[in-house]
Every structure is written in structure tokens, then in C-alpha cells.
Image 1 (tube, rainbow, N blue to C red):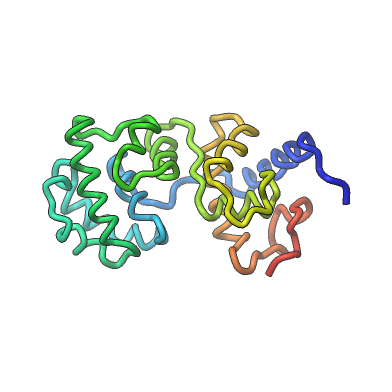
Image 2: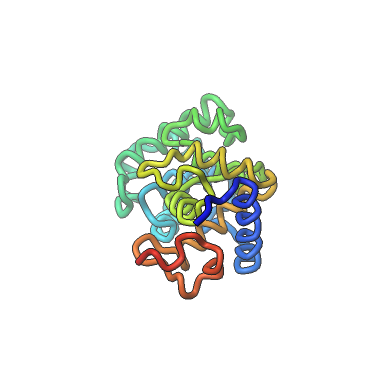
Length: 222
């Protein structure tokens, strides 16, 4: 099989994304939130845990600590009592209290809206920052989670698809270079939702995948 040129790969990426747009016309975050602060907290909690589990925890958490000032005044133990059902809840709870204190100290109790400021907060990496930028502020962001890593590899949208330890920052840079900035947030959502519904980690449902005809990995897994 002849190697796919960069031009052909990018054209295929856009064709496949157009199909995902038809399949998932109105993507949105699976996390429940009503403010940038709530989204930031929920996203920090979502690491190594499902969004569904986070959504079970956050109503009581937000009721107990509705603002950064309230959360900053809490003890880590108080937060742990409300997050203990989640993976890594001890470190996450510590990060949340420290994060809220920094919001109060450095940002006037407001969630900042730049990558540099967001990633200065405890427990906040590029993925979390991109989630907040795109979903709370409408600023283009491309969160790279395990689903995005898996799908961009299987679809061979990225050049390092063979890598056993792909670099999320490199993935973000390579994929966003191929799409207009206004699509980045929804592009990530659609890849994540497709990964959850069809392109599962262990046994992808290739027979029912709308990308089956063009996916280089179709029928080779599971």
C-alpha cells in the first residue's frame, strides 16, 4: 500500500470530520456546570475518572462551596468528604483548595482565561485549561484526552500514530494546524464522543462506524 501524502491525509481528515459533524451535530461537554469556576473544578476532578462519576459528586460540592472564596476557606478534609468516591480524590481535593486560594489571591476570585494563567493553577494542565477556554469562554482550545489520543492514532491523523507514548502537546499542535481555530473545541468533543460511543479502547465497533470506509485501522482491532 502506497504511503499517504500529507495533502491526502489532511483531505481525508476533513472528509472524516465532516461525517462526524453529521453524526454529532451539537456536541457539548459531558460535565455539568453553570460557571467557569464550576467547570474548572469539575475538570480537575475528571482526571482518571469518568465524567458521569464527577457529575454525581459536584452538586453537593458546589452547594457546600459555591465560590472560590468558600472553597479556599475549606479544609482539605471537608473537600475529601465530598469527593472520596473519585479516583485520586486526596490529591484532587488538595489541589482544589490550593487552586481556589490562588484564584482569590492572584485573580480577584475570577477564573483567568489565558493558557499561561490557567496552567499556573494547582492541578491544571493543558488539557484542563483547553476545556475551560473552549467551553467556558469560547476561546479556541483542543483538549487532548485518552479518546483523542486513541482516535487520532487509529485514524492516522497524526504522523506519530505508531508511538507507544504519544505526546499530547505534539498531538494538539499537529491536529490544530489542520483545522480552523473555531472548530478546535467541537473537534475535540466529537472525537471524544465518537470514542465513547463507537471507537472503544478494547473493542471498537468498526461494523457500525460511519468512518469505516476510510479509517486505516477499520477491522484490524478487537
